[in-house]
Image (cartoon, rainbow, N blue to C red; front, side, top):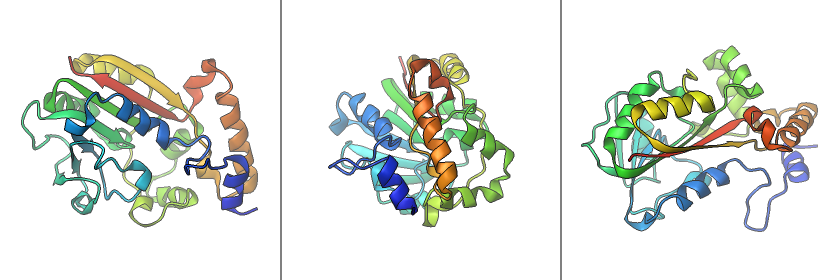
Length: 243
């Protein structure tokens, strides 16, 4: 059974092209639903990268999207109206510049997350929205990723069928990767209305092996069977506001 057949068998696509147990749609749907006036909103996409995945595209839905990354590849991102490279600490923006800050699969790569959270708080307007997606440190994929050196992560990315820039690994720290720690740190920075959702999508990391994929599917079904097992799900979705 090929990789595509595995996905189609266990996680078929709907008529609109969304795959069952997809992890991206819930995040971006939540982002859009949580923004009161998206057409007038100025959005900071922190860790925007090269912007090669159509499912993560937000330009056009919001008034303006500004990309910020330590990687100069962000300058070629077609999904942002403007792009900036920074040093990983101080944002090159004035206070209260943005209505929304979104960060997708970035927090796990940040060495000093409290400094970055403080910068996000600074550049958000009063009432501004912060939303991000990051791995749960208690999930088997994250545990494995913490054990395996970063230089081997490109193999895992290609197992997920990622190609080109999306397959290139970035150094990981996992210093803000549990619901409790995230809520605590956001509260210390002054954020309010902190909400977390836990998502377990299809086991993309195991597509290279049919038997392992079957085990991953069983795990996905198990942790999605009850809210009490949510803490074992792979992905943490976070939403918070600046008062």
